Image 1: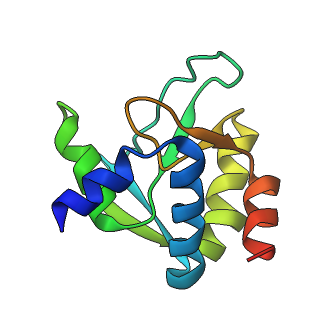
Image 2: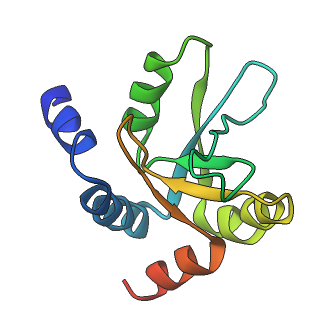
Length: 123
């Protein structure tokens, strides 16, 4: 199974985006990483459009694969889609951030709350 997950993780950003929305539409949750203090993992926006990016994954296993690649100890946790959209993303965007959808070390799709809501509505 891990080989299949690696294959999916190494796909281009647009393919991972489609996989992400397929999974979260079914599970109605997203996965994030937090450290031992409860602080969320945030990424730098290499393009400089946003002060930070909140990475999200479609399942625990993908989030845990990312946690294993980082030096610090992060744990995967899920949040219901409604809380993600109506609470967490509102706070993230109020602080100037955006969401990195299913990132890997090569690329990611960056979306704002309205785009994510639209994608879910169209599923």
